[in-house]
Image (cartoon, rainbow, N blue to C red; front, side, top):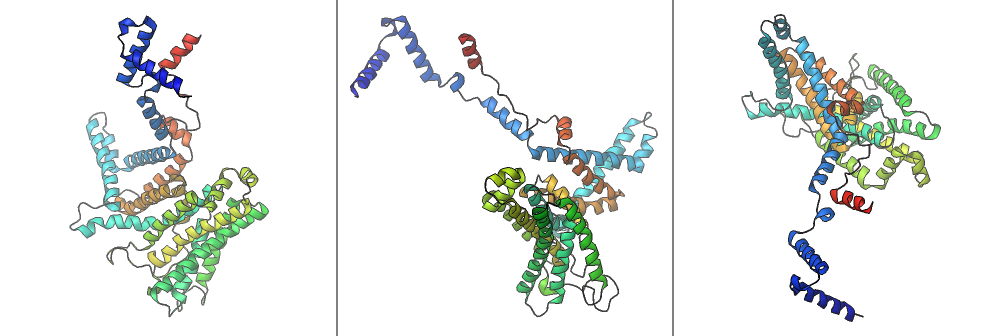
Length: 455
């Protein structure tokens, strides 16, 4: 069986060792081509097409949703710069004689816009003008402190998005979570520090989960739209908490006529993360753990696979044997628990002197923006939450040092939502490729040559 093969191999070796002049022209040409291929390596289609691989990688990067999010932030900042320029008094004064001395107008524009965003950086990242290190890094800790509830609530909204649900009930879920965590925090006594804090956190997360789970149950059992249900539950939660805060013996502080709770007991407070000189508390660590949990849930667990399958195509998920109703309820329960963590962290770490009905501070609706900007990805939500925390922390510094209205920061945040909601607009402005359009690979020269030869 192996004899013909060995004989053919020996013949090939003999031919390879012979002088090309003693062979026929066809065999000599084949030997020369074989030696050239061995010397130079693969050519033609076998050679690695580095240019095409780089082009493919660039195409994937430019068509990524992350690129659209970055473009939305850039456009919003540009729009904010235009508003800053139009509202600055020095720019207005210099533009009055623009045609006489145009350089003055451009200098005023640079000072106004540069001063505004440098103040934003100084108030949210690091203060390079501070006399000591502690004062210099305080802006960063303030940013992370503001970002803590935004990250947790944004994760709850993003998880619902991945399950095909539009959870805009963050306000109501935060309010009931804050009420439950606060009641355990100031109403339960005689419990040591770690256990008391854990009880308050569990109570807040459970209240948020049940409040969101109610919307999921109505969606699964009756088909009620979750947008309408969560909006109505926001109103129910707001007026319910307002009643509890205004009624003595419930949430209202004893002996007070103000709609405010008693202060949270020290045994139920989230301790400072890096010292008493900073407002940053351990709630930020809990938010980071929540990011890791949501990533694991969506990427590594069967429940997360069910959530994503229902979000992508409920009919296909039902055909595959997934209980879509149960997945809907479970996803809203987990989402509400994450938003409840945001409400609990506000009461147990942010506002420990007692809270009123404005404890959510608009975080429930800002979480929608954070989830959209983060692309409903837990790591993207983390980055978006820190960005919006920086806007909140630096807005006051920008207003105090430059006299710029802090409402401009709110306008920038709103514009981010507007641009995120219109990806085709971002792609058209920055000439980004559409990921839904299939890219036809370019034909190589060798392929075209073979086709031409065959024709």
